[in-house]
Length: 161
Image (cartoon, rainbow, N blue to C red; front, side, top):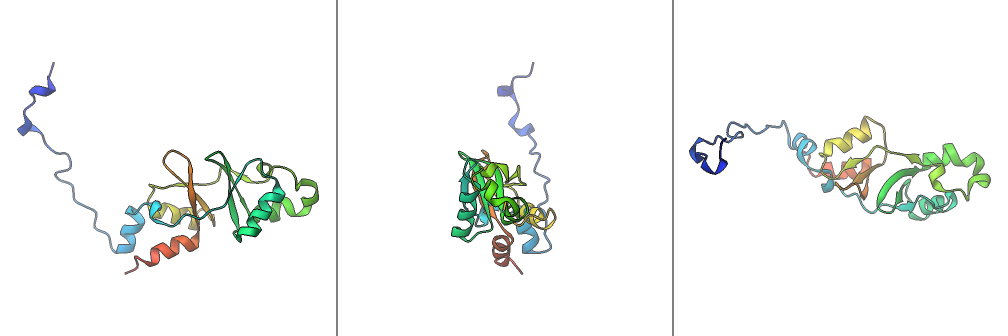
């Protein structure tokens, strides 16, 4: 049996000793691959509890002048409620469902990004997956904020060559 306390310290070979750092074509490429999403402004963001009424959720959208809000249970994300949800799920039947919980008409399990993901992940969620607003979660799964095309572009503009 080998005793680690008896190991020869000169025999250790650092596995990263031959590591060649990545060379990027531009600062923008580096930012997309390496900068964490936490560097993008993700607040303020509007949140409502899952039991909030559809009426209250729409009023929160209107009052805050935003096009999406996060639906939470405590500090955990359960869905997103957007203007598109209002148009597609609520508009034609508002009087009937105005007092129903927003949980009934929100988009459950939305695409999310994590604060430590590279900025390119947010760009992909917006550009490739087609989401205009993407919730940002902390590593522990609690809500940190939301990113939008405007917030991402504002961040990227600082890093253009």
